Image (cartoon, rainbow, N blue to C red; front, side, top):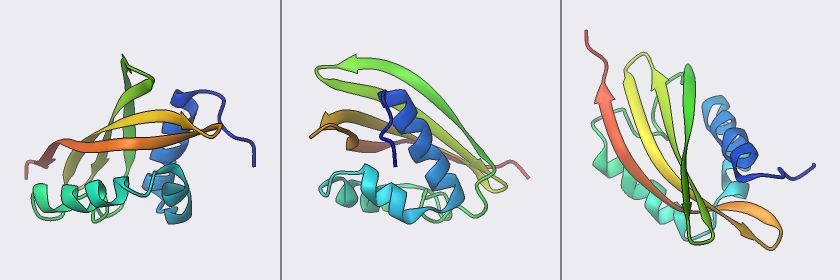
Length: 113
């Protein structure tokens, strides 16, 4: 498989993988220490709004947030029928591949009924 040339291409591929439930791509995109951050996000979000638990993600919006040191920053907002969740992800080239080196929950909001 061809590696994404830019951080934005990698971030878009990753967001699509999350939306489609492609766990193998998600795991390939993150550094091992980021897994603990992903698990902590589930505890911070309202019930059902963890990225890992959101049912039927319908779409996402990817927003470039600039650069910090040698990392490219993006916010990704995922939406489903139950609400939205936004994560901040820092991408960095590691051994020639774009990898998520830091992730944090920005917001999680239940849909209005």
